Each structure stands twice: as C-alpha cells, then as structure tokens.
Image (tube, rainbow, N blue to C red; front, side, top):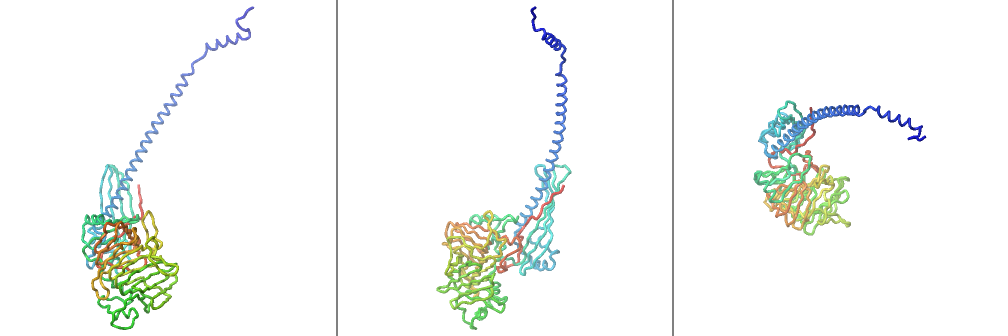
Length: 534
C-alpha cells in the first residue's frame, strides 16, 4: 500500500495543522502594556520637566539676586575709592584740627574726614541696571591710632551693606563687606607719597604729564586705591634737612643758622676753633655711642656694597678714601681713614650728611683685596638686609649704577619690600647746610648708567629737577620720587610704591624727610572679608 507519508508521522502533522487553526493573537496586550509604560514615562518626564523648570527658575532668580547684591558691594567700593582719589589723597589739614584729633580721636575722626576730604560717612548708593537693583549703605568708624610724633597712623573700620533684588519682586539678597582704611595725618613721611611734583596741575594735566614723560606705576593687588600722584604749588618738600642733621650729629634740634663752625667742630670731635671744618669724612661719636656720618666737601664717588654680614660704604674725595664697614649682626664697626683704622663694638646711625655734591653714587662689590668697586654691568644687591640708610646732600646727586636692597622679592614683575626692614632715602636739599646758600641741587641719572636702572629708594629733590640723562633708558624706582620738576628726556620711569606704607611700616628707622605742612593721606583701602546672607 502506498502512503503519502510515513504512517508514524502523519498524526503529528495533522495535529500541528489542527493546532495552528486554534492559535489566539498576543500583540494587543503587548502594545497596550507598552503604551501604558511609555505613557507613564511621558507623564513622569512632564512632571520632572516642570520641577526642573521651577528649580532652574529659582536658581536663576537666586543667581540674579546674588549678582545684584554683589554688584552693589563692588559699586559701593568703587564709589568710595573714586571719592578718595578725586578729593585728593594727600590734602591739607585745617589749622588746629590735628591737635583736636589727637586729644579725642573717636569724637573728632568723622568730622576730620568730612572737612579734609569734602565728604564723609555714611554714604548711600542706589542704582539699577538690566532689571537688577541694589541699595548700598557704607559706614566708617575709628578703630585705633598710633602716635609717631610728627604724624599719626590711624586705622578705620569700613563696612558696606548691600541689598540686591530682581525687577520689582520683594525678595532681596543681602551682602556685607568688612574693610579697613589706613590714614596718615600730620607732617607725613615723604616716602609714603609715591610721586610728588611741586607744580600745580589739574587731574587732566597730571595724566598728560605722566604720559608725556613716560611715567607709570607698578601696582600690587593688596591696595584698592591707585598710587597717588600729588601735584601742587604749595611747599610740601622741606627746605632744609636740619632734623636729619641734628640726629646724625647728635646735637639735638637746632635751627640752620645756629650751626656755627665752632658747634659743628665740637660735634665732629675736632679741636675748638672758628675755622671751617676741613674737607673729609667724619664718623660721629658721643656719650650715647656712634652717630651718623658727616662729609664736608664734594665727593667724587660713594659706593655701597655688601660683604658677608657687613654693610660697606666707601667715600672717595680727590686722592683720599674712607671706608666704613659695619655689621649689625655682630655689633661691629671698622672705619678706615687716611689717618688710621678705628674699630668700635657699636654700629652707627644710618644717616649720611654730605655738605657738598655727590658726583657718582651707586652699588658695587667688595673684591678679594678688600677694595669696593662700582658695578654697572649687572644687578647686585648693595644695601644689606635690615639696614636703613638716609643720604642727605646739600648739592646735586648723580646716580651712576643700581641701588638694590638685599632680599627683595619679585612677583609677576613687581618688586615687594613688605618682608624687608631695609630702607634707602636720598635727599638733595639744594642749599648749603652751614651758610644756607643756594646750590645747584637736584638728582640726576648719569648718562653712562645702565640702560635698565633699578633704584630701590625714596628720591627727594627739594629745589631742582629729577633728570634722566642719556637716551633709551628705563629707570625703575622701588619707593618714591619727589621733585620740583621732572626731565625725562624721552626715557621711561616706572615707580613701584613701597608697599610697607600700606601697613603703616617704614622699616630701617624713621630717618626720612617729612612734608613741610600737616597733611592727611588715605594711603590704603583693604578688603578684609565678604559675607552673603539669604
């Protein structure tokens, strides 16, 4: 018998055909399930999106209020800075007010600021921009005073509160700033004034003067105030150096006309006589120890150098040489003169009085044979760390080489002296110490000096110009410059203010000239802290 298939497989095949005829559809439930899942996800995304938008809107609104409050603090701080700079950072003090302030500083402080700076505290500032608005309230109160004799150092507490908001919505964000004002009042130390020209100028004229003469400031970041440029026709630079000469000679306060040859000879330890003091270099000695240095006559060269832990100062006049070598660490001084060598277990005062001109002043090195030579081809420190020097000349001073303080720290191309106790002051009075006769005076940078000259000093020329000789030079002064006039001759001058005055410190002793009349100077504005409140 013939079969269409194997007999044993046919029932299975038939059963498969019957089963296929009975199958039910499964796509519908799956689609419904997936639709339910995606619908749930979609609704969740909508809910999450709404929540996210609300959170983002709240965050944006909060950020805008933060911006408004922060802008208020910044604008108030800038307003105070512009007010202090525009009112004149070094201004005269009304007669008698300094004495009143010293007697009762907290009570007189606010009135003194208002009288001298053409305004005072509290200060209110309201502004709005791009939907943001802020309201700032600034107050300033007396914190402390340090009386330094001829002048006072005053610290004041500054507080700025700013309330910032968005559009007209009621919520506000509040921020506050704590700051400090540093103020000097009295006969101010001239090194605290970075640039002073004894010539009346407007603000626009001062800007043109600096640009025309290639003058610029190198600024640090600690002080929010710009370095002051004082231009006034009033006599701010003292006419004579009598106070400094009195300290150096150890003879107390005297009037210039009272310093007779006999008194000077007695102070120098010479035999009594009415004859003029012979030319030479004299180390002052008295019952209290060693005083300063007095030089009678013109000097050909003065070289400053460092030898180990000793400061070396060499004076050359005609064919004679005097060498002063002293170590503050060892309290030892050796004075080599044409007449012999003198040694002391003391150190002298850092004041050098030259009754004459200085034809060449600069830094150098001490060679192996002990000779000090001036160096112009490289930058070498020549003022020992911790040493303060004040050089006063009755006539012209010529700078021939670098004068660099040991241990000066450089940061971002700006020199810093904050951690140093060294100081160099150069003061040309323009009049003879004994006769009061007018001299050429002035301070000049020699034509043969280095093309990039570094002078770490406060330079003061009372009656003549500060002049840069030669061409293509860049003179960098770390300190200050005060002069009757300025002659740049197409060269560049960069001034980095001594940052120690921003903290009220001077370093190296109080051997510097003071302003001829009482003045008030707001020399620093610092931010101490910043807080934000919800």
